[in-house]
Length: 408
Ligand SMILES: [Zn+2]
Image (cartoon, rainbow, N blue to C red; front, side):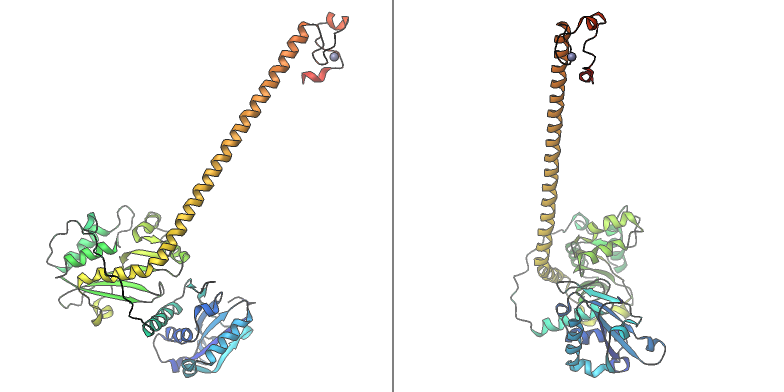
């Protein structure tokens, strides 16, 4: 926490929250009462209080710091009016400023000027994504979506010829063989486009149970995950792919790439492999592939053929943001081109100027040499042009003794 900024901490009674992942539950209460836009520019912190760590109480604290003390007032007022918060708060609901800043609480992300939650936000982001989804489904209008367009088949050369397979593990082997990035020293992952994933799911539909889920997690408020389980019930690991989502910000997308800087060739290839565009990751990469008993969701199964429609809807959701990113990228490219053109023009002008200066200098030198020759032949002082005296002629001088400067 910053030692000088106004700070307010909301105190939750962990026993009343009564959940294993109580951090996320507390943040849900927080985000139901406050929109990120309301507290734009805030720093967020979270964790068990010092007294909790010492076994003296059982309190989880969410802290908001902001340059403007009015934000603390707003947080206090919004949470004081929240029935959800009243159900789970500690007897001492809030703690402020120095008493709050002395708590050993880790970073929980920050809100940028436009109200995005950015940075590492282990509990606060999953909670925020869940609350946003709650609100969306609450005021869901029967928006008529455009019909899903046909997609190009095959998606790529990598899915042009897919062999017929009879065993699930052969599908996994094929995915590893075809989609593991080559020449990057990084062989335990794979990447593919949404269309390639559709080709695979459709080709091996008989062997697969396709599960589609969207959820919020520390990486994104709205992650998309496709799990391909073996169709016959088994306890095995799925083939799991996550992608087609937005990072909280472009800098968070860059941080993701930086996680691999110890494998520089892979890190260089990653933006292309993952289809990173600004803050978006448009391709799918290998997920955690936890076994069935952990990740299997009964209601998440969809027909392989409807995967494309799901992806298309997500793409539509990103369309505006992507257009914005592309415009920004185009503008940046144009600016760079203009800057280079100006730089080239400036260099060319400088070169012309230097050449003109050089030509003038040569002309002046030439005229000077001509004058010297003329004056010498007429026995005149080469400096002042007046006639030389008898002694100067006798000693073959070319100038009067006081006229030396002309030589220099
Ligand atoms: Zn002279």
